[in-house]
Amino acid sequence: MKNSTHIASHLLRSRIGKLCVAIIGTSPSEMIEKATEVLKDSNFLEFRLDYLAKPAAALPSLKHFLSSKTAATAIATCRRKENGGRFDGSKTAELEILLKAAEAGFHLVDIELETIEALPQESLSELRAAGAAVIVSYHDFHATKGLDAIYQRMLPFAPDYMKIVPTARTLSDNLTLMKFLERVEDESNSSVVGICMGDPGIISRVLGLRAGSAFTFASASQGEETAPGQIAARTLIETYRIDQVDAATKIYGVAGNPIASSLSPLMMNTAFRRETVNAVYLGLQTSKVEDLFRLAHEVPIQGMSITMPLKQEVLPLLERTDALSAKIGAVNTVLRAQDGKFYGFNTDVAGVVSPLERRLSLRGARVLVLGAGGAARAAVFGCCDKGAEVFILNRTPETAQKLAKQSGAKTIKREAVAKSQFEVIINATPVGMSAAAKSGAAAKATPASPLEEHEINARFVFDLVYNPIETPLLKMARQKGIGVITGVEMFVQQGARQFEIWTGKPAPEEEMLRVVLHMLRQNAEPSAPANPVAATSSVVSNQAAAAERPKSEPKSEAKAPAKQSPPAPARKAAPAKPVRSKPVVKEQPKSKSKARSR
Image (cartoon, rainbow, N blue to C red):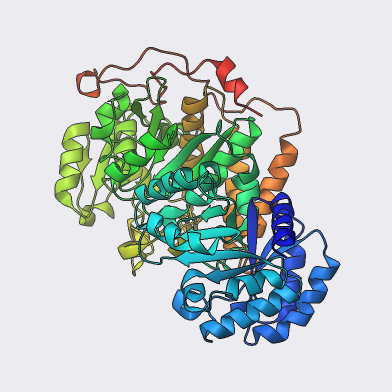
C-alpha cells in the first residue's frame, strides 16, 4: 500500500494546477452548481465541507459529481471553528468526515496540524489507505511568525503537502513568508503551500508561486472568500494572469491605504496585457513608507503608484525627483531605474490639467481647490503654473495657508465660497468616495459632498473622486446646469503617464478608460450581481479579444517618454513649468523590454 500510495501521490502532483478554487455552499446542490461553473476556468477545487450543516450527508452527491468530472482534482476540507472554519464537531469527528470524503473519491484531504497532533498516530495512514493524499495545514489569524517551527512540527507526519498560512500585518510579512518558501523548497519531499492572509498579504497570493509555493487558493467569486484577503479566481486568472507570472515578470503596484477597492490593478494589468508587457501590477496596502520600501528593494519592485497617505511621506526615501515633483512636494509615481535606485515623478498634474484644458483656458481663470493633500497640491500647482487664480479651501486653515504660500495661490474661508464665482471648482478631498472604497476612520459617517448646493457657483465642477463616477457633488452640479468632469478622466490620464514612464511605450488610453468605466458602471447598477468578479471577467475577456486586433495610436497627445540622463537632486532643481511629467531617468533599452515580453 505504501508503494502504491507513493505512485498515486506522484501522479497527483502532475495533474493539479497552480490555482485551487474554494467552493462553499449551504447544500451539496449549491456546491455542485458553483463547482460546475468554476470548472470552466480551473480543474482544481477545494470543497469546504465545514460550510454544510451535515457534511457527511452531502458526500454521496459529491461522490457522484466527482465520478462524472474525471478531469477535476478535489480537496475535501472540514475545518473546525477553533481553526477558522465552521465545523463545530470534535477532532475525531473531523477525521471521520475526511475519511468518508477520501472513500467518496476526493483526491486530497486537508487536516489541521492541531487536529492530527491530537489524534492517534495511525490516523494519517488511515486517510491514505482510504485513497487520498494528505495536506496538513496550519493557520495563524494574528501574525506571521515562527514559520520554521511550524514546518518542523509538520515534518514527522510526512504529509504530501504542508500548508502554512499566517496573517500579514505589514508588507514585510510577505517577505518573511517568501524567504521561508525559498528556504524549504528543496528540504523536504513534501510540497509546501504558503500564503499570507489579510489585505497586506494579497501580493503573496500572486508572488508566492514564484517563491516556491506549490499552489495558491482563490474564491469562486467575490463575496465568497474563505480567508481574509482571498482573491476571486477569475481575477487571479484574467487580471493578474497568475499562470504567466515567472522569474522574468516585472512587478509594479499601487501603494497606500486603503487600496483594496482600487481599480488601478485592473487598469494597469489591462494596459500591460494590451501592450504585451511581461509585468504584473499588485495592491500594496500600507501606511508606512519604510515598510513599502523594504518590500520594494527586496522583491524587487520596478515601479509604484503612490496614493494617500504616502504622496509626501515617500519623498525622503527617493534618490531624486523631477523638478515638477520637487516643486509640488508630492509624488504619485516611483520608478526603479537601471541603477536600482528609486526616482519620483508627479503625473497627477497631467491628470488634472489635461481634462481642464480640453474645456477652457486656465490663464486668468478663477479656480477653487478643495483640500490640501497630495492630489490638491498637484491641482493647485498645475493650475497656478497655467496662470490661473487659485483659491484653496481646507478644513485645516494652517495647511491651506502653507500650500498657498508655496504655490502663489490664495486661501478662502467657507462662508465666502457661496458669494464667489469660479470658472472651476476642483474637489481634491475623499469626500464623496463610495463606502466600499473607504476603510478605518474614513468609513465612518462623513458628508456626502464637500460643498452644499448653494455654494456651487462655477462653469465646471471637477471631482477627483472616481468611485462612484457620479458623486453627490457632480449630481448637484448637473442639477444646476453646470458642466462636470469626472474623476475617471484624471484617474486614467495620470495612470497613462505612469505606464509611459515605466515602459517607454505609449499607453493604451482608450482601453484603460474602457475597462475602468465598465467596472464602475457594473458596480453602480442596482441589479448588478453580487459577484462583481463577473464584471471583471467580462471586461478582461473583451480586452483580451481586443488585444488581437490591430493596435491604434491613442488619441492623447502624450508621447513616449524620451530617454534622458538622471535627474538633478530634487532640492537643487530649478522650478519648472511643464505640466506633463516626463521621466528624466534613462529607461531600459527596448531590446531588453521585448526580450521579457510575451
